[in-house]
Length: 146
Image (cartoon, rainbow, N blue to C red):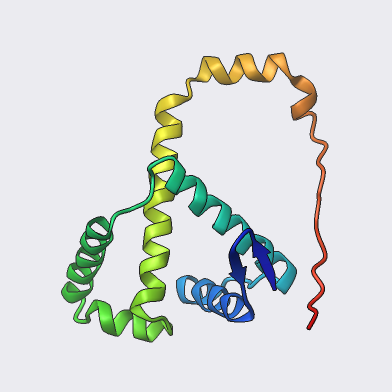
């Protein structure tokens, strides 16, 4: 469906993304293929950024998060394995979601810590044209060939 440098995004990736959206919120509206593909491209780019900035979650951190989820689920009379199976996900698929969520949380914490309100105000005042409400949308069309 798309290629981001050496990372291929396939139809199977689109199907997985749909399953993950529905698994986390059964009432969620699943985006169309174009929007979903855009989200997957963004995710690849974010993962590269997380790696570059040292925000990527380690295996031990992901395992602790899973243990915490499992402990909470056991209090409710089920287990992590049964829960992810009921969502239609594999453990590997859910681990990817947890890793992305942990890295996103780290980035959010860093931004809150690093950005002060005064800096935001100065930036806004220095470039009001950037914040005038106009928006540019850029897209590419990919055609599958043999």
